[in-house]
Image (cartoon, rainbow, N blue to C red; front, side, top):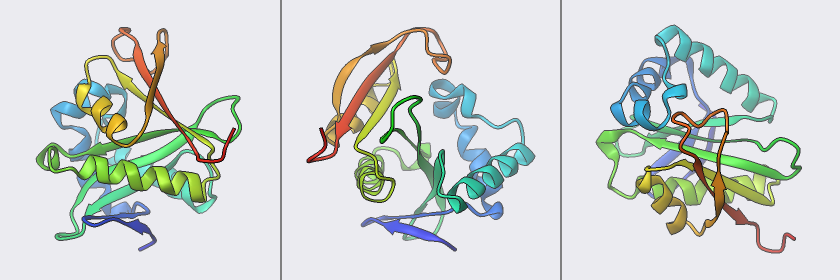
Amino acid sequence: MKLFFETEHLMIRQFEIEDANRLYHNHMEEKVKKWFPNECYADINEAKGAIEFYRDCVDKNSLPFVLAVLLKETGELIGDTGVSEVEGRENEVEIGYQISDKYCGKGYATELLNAMTKFAFEHMRAEVIHGRVVHGNGASARVLEKCGYTFVNEEFGAEDDPYGNGMMVYKKVKKGAN
């Protein structure tokens, strides 16, 4: 098991093939289907393929850099997090996170986002981190705001905007970066 970091309640590690069933089921939850329909897997084999891709990227220290999120107390896979490229912008990444419905409302998303932000600044050499939220996903916007991300603008016409209603764009700049 390749552990990257821990928080008070969470362990963040590289995905293992054995995570495919739980990853598939986490991404089939209604919340994920609603806010991230392009991140729902067709079946467990597709989840396995995604894990193989994520593992390869992590092994090569390349983007997207996607990790598994486990609850320390039980070892259960409760979500995932990662950073991906912002095309044409060196030292800038986009952050993402997902916590299973069963564990929402317990502060884990905020705990995770704070830790992943620190990880991206320190280990991924990011100087600016962006967070994009589909209009209507107020819970995710509040998590970004709690973690010190600042609303920048609205983006329309993005290919990953599932409803065409626009995305709210947030960012956080590393202290000392221009």
